[in-house]
Length: 120
Image (cartoon, rainbow, N blue to C red; front, top):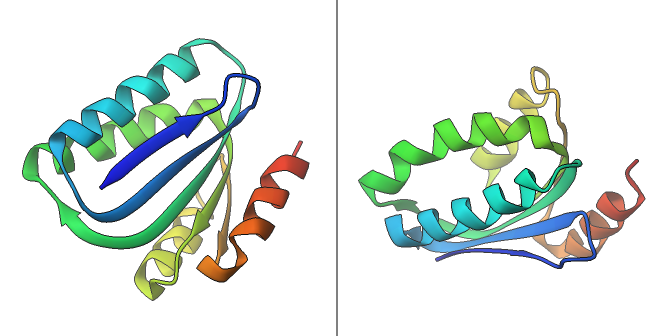
């Protein structure tokens, strides 16, 4: 399951991953996020990875291209996960990314939201 939500009066969007991501879910999330990014301004993103059990092949091939294109519109990413491999991947990517990325354990999701709210 993949969901995307952004309140109209906020510059923070939240993505939740819980299980396997379908192509339909990926299309819906990408469309909604693209619409928000097209409105201009920088966005902050909370990625709540509860459980990741893979992606349908069609969704997998869309993800890297979209992820790279959206990075220019995202100033901060708070990755919330307990998966060691995702933490390592995010921390490694943060060294070459123009986006500020910080990793939080799932028990610290409120701290992640506060970090995004305070980020300039």
